[in-house]
Image (cartoon, rainbow, N blue to C red; front, top):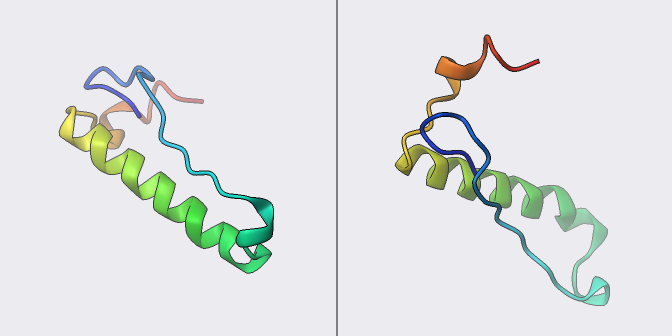
Length: 56
């Protein structure tokens, strides 16, 4: 997650026993985590387009 300045200020994760998460679900779970982090970042004022030039 990022704040309004683009600084990394936190993270979101998920976990489960390997035996309960089929390999076919990994991409779906990862997409959900990324979407959740993006939503929180947006609420904290992060705007990706404003930070594209400085990111490499």
